[in-house]
Length: 366
Image (cartoon, rainbow, N blue to C red):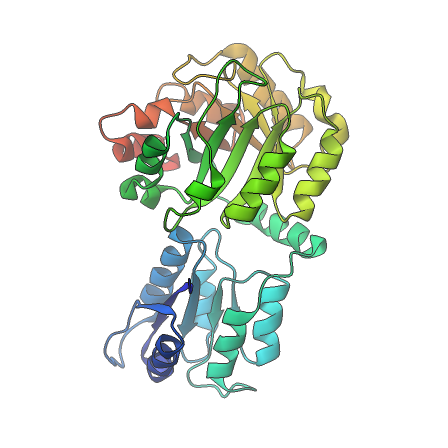
């Protein structure tokens, strides 16, 4: 299935946009024209660039193409949005390398300045070139992610026992509009006396999946990581538990080689020092606020807050995430202790209006 292409321009790129739309539709792409719909010499590029950036944010498997007079204005605007990697395509080579090296998801092509190559060929090269997944490029993109993320951030979390409930939750359009990354809890009764429904092959058939993080509360995570990576193109991060009897470093290295960020989770009783040897290798530290395995538990309070503060001090380069017991009453205290990401299940999905519940947990509401 061809990718969705979000297309937009101001007056200076209008004619190029119209030509691109016609060419892309002929090639079978699904093209969403985000404007301008008519040539208006007085229109402004930020509204069109932001529309495409937001659309690509919500649909991580898509691409965007933008145009204005010099392509710089739309590029600057698009890059204000988390998860957007926009570059100016002034040649076929630039389009190729921004995809191979930088995993760019929006190409910006000048409408008034002559490019080194034909703009149509630049766009086609951008759309047909895959990301290299080379480890050095993954490392650099991960560093960009850490710079751009706005914290605190709330991740809607799914812990369900059947595909119907899973699909209902992840397809909630209003919740999807509020959060670009979601967490899925995976349990198989090997580590805790609980299980969850998780079938990557079935999930892959759900349209426009958000970016995903897997919290693997299982003793043997590697087979699930491989299966999920194969079937889920929006998988961005996996989290394994420090308590498993497996070589953690080799799992971390293997997951990085798959192009994934990696986190390590600590149960409430597990000391922070247990990750000392991994601290420079991982991207995230997840601190459990409850004993894992079930939803709707009460946050364990002071000892967890103390643990968050210590982790923030020891490992300022890591994203500190908290899972369990996060709700409207506890989130402010957890955030002040130093948590940058909070995973929320019950406080969202047991609400009569999950979207409103999530809004009350957003950074602006803290």
